[in-house]
Image 1: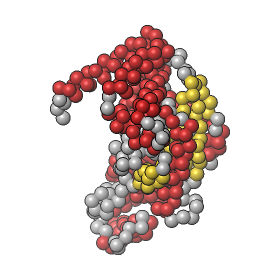
Image 2: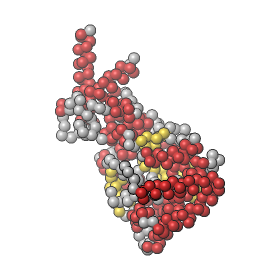
Image 3: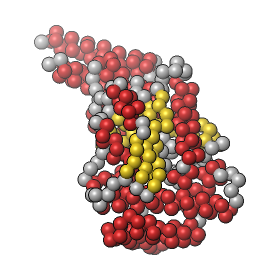
Length: 297
Length: 99
């Protein structure tokens, strides 16, 4: 597809922006890059319209009482937090000694579920610094597969491949039958399959309550887990300090064991995921990076 | 020799019949009888209209009924092309696994 001149300029500017931040990261480290983030994001939030359109559906529901000015501040905090996550990712990718320290409070629970030997479906969402935290999964001594979009693969590749350590094998969701054959085979071997469960791209979905409105969430993960007889673990990461994070299990359930009719069972599972996500955004309102109107689908 | 060929053909026909019955019964296909499924009809999208979630069930069913694992999309693409392809896959891999 041919790009317009403005698209070409935008692309060039984005590329220059990336180069600038990588140079700052190499020369000044994480703290210096954070300092540059403030004016850049302030200008972006002040002048840009797209980001307000993208975040408004979430913030209108998360903070219904906030006025226009407060909402602008919310968007600034949100984008700044996202910028810091991106900086961390670049910083860790470029610097082999860079480490974030964190705690995975429920790691023993996850180990116990893995020991059951029926594979595990781990549900993630576009929140917190999930990609950097996935390094921790290496310590679980189980093969990890991530069902991902190609674009996401590029982003994570950037971080993990620069570091030369890829903690998971990527299954392309745009592959034959959405990568479901590999995912099923992995669960049958007792492996872990990671899936994003907060955004519907295609396929079957369920309407659930999320922040006071109905949202459509995908149900493929629950179907996969129920068919393979695997448990579902809802795992979210959160950035808790400049070099700190926390990784926690927000729910564990076993789709297909309740005796409900299939469709009803999957709606129930999607609602459980949505409730866990709701609790997460209550605690970390600015670490919501799903810049997409999930209520409009 | 001829007897063996006839026996093989009979086995394959039985296998295809079993597979069609399994598809209709276990994937709960509505308004379709096993006999209506053509041996060369595509299983996914056009054809029987199965989707990726049916593929999950099919992988588990093949494992449960025939003890075979479909490991990746390349294997799945070949095996799930039609009833004929699935029967060929099962017969070939069953023979291999039983030596």
